[in-house]
Image (cartoon, rainbow, N blue to C red):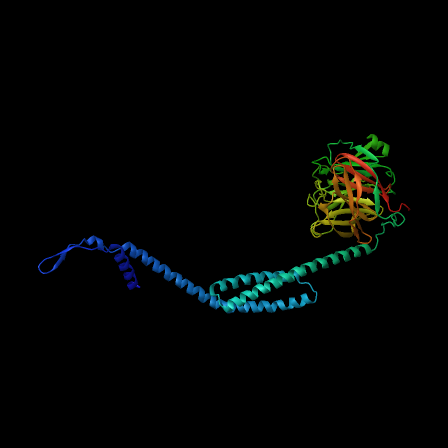
Length: 468
């Protein structure tokens, strides 16, 4: 190494410092005068070259260590790859038999990705025939696993859809609760075919500035004393919460905004029994609505002045504006919708478990033990935020969407009796303002009630067959 340094230094000195010097003869000798400064040892160049040599030595040593390490790792990686291929064989068999292994394949795919990174590192260092072959095989296997994952994901979605359909059929076939009235004579009309223009148009008695709320007629035919009563339930706090309901004994009183009774069912707008969202229904002697910031339905008894509640079933029930009606203009906190029809009471909502799609649960009030219960639940494939509102008629859920400022459209129906859906409907629904806060059907007169940005509208529903 020292010889190399001297050779480099002498070569450098000879190239840059060589000169011709004149001399003279003196006493049979050649004499010349030299400048000694031109032969000063180049210390700086020596130091620089020495550093370069050390750097080269370190790089060579590191490279040698990496190559040695990679050579040692190659058999281990080959063993891991062989083991992975063997572990994949059962999944190949299951896949060929049409059995679904999506979750397990996802884990194996993650392992293969990491193994492929290790193979690529070794291949970049050794780059011999073994590493080339291993890299190509890993790439081929990765494509194979990805293909299996894609196919099995689609198969799993098909299986989940079949399970949803079977679950809905089970709910439909459940034993009918004792207070579930046989409604065949009332529900032979078939689907809605037409909805009239508004036959009632009125500004909310609380004023047009209260854009969110609900209203309607007593929804239970057998209700004594309130059979012809009308009610209005505005949301007085931020268009989200309300704690009062106004009751009129007759239609004439309602239209004239006179002779009403005011009921307060919660002491404040943040009380657990406060109504959250613009959907409620008066059914019998009680007002049913969504309880404040919860997955619960509340029942306020107008006579006893007490509240009972029940928690809706499902994984991740949406509330507090998680899954509102939101087709065009989202209605704040409209997550849970309470409806009534010929068959009883219903709750419409969405869950994380059903991917934000609408869920239908049937509610039953047990008057003997004074408890509110959920007896059946159906899962639809309709994304709740893709609708502007929904209502129930004879066990069929109808959903609407925004068309323009003066028209909605009923576009979807789901039949709880069969589990079947129809998304080919196109029934127009006129309105006087842009946004729909609530929409409900009343079985006593076959009318549909809309709270339309402070306007109260009523429509007549027409069916395929009006025979009863």
